[in-house]
Image (cartoon, rainbow, N blue to C red; front, side):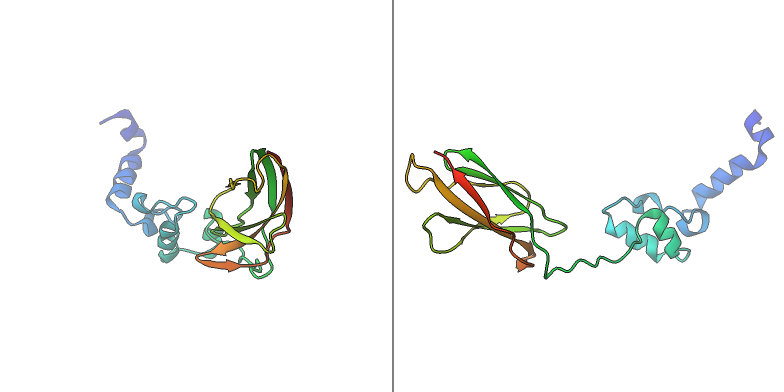
Length: 167
């Protein structure tokens, strides 16, 4: 018999009971089994933990899988857009997604009648690399963006951003 086992007779049996008992709900209510270990951004792990018979909402608050409801009004949300001239007719557009899938970017050049769809971007920044209308001559470009969820545009268009493109 080892010294640790003689001083603490229950230590070994406790460990063996924990290994034998694979059910998370009975021996450790705070953590799921290793194969369902919860990490942020793991919805399957959170669903497993919430399905346990010992789960309570206060336990969910401790684990960070319970929280207040998202009360964001999607119909009034609009992206924040900023633009930087890179020279040679290229413009870099930076935007925020705010838990949306991405943004649709629209652009208009000086003299164009209306905005045209430039593309959909899922991560910032977006590069507008259209050539200059008149090579060697500066031009004004106008940009706006709208949020995208799935394939649908949602919310309001961003404020229009104006950039003076240099050759």
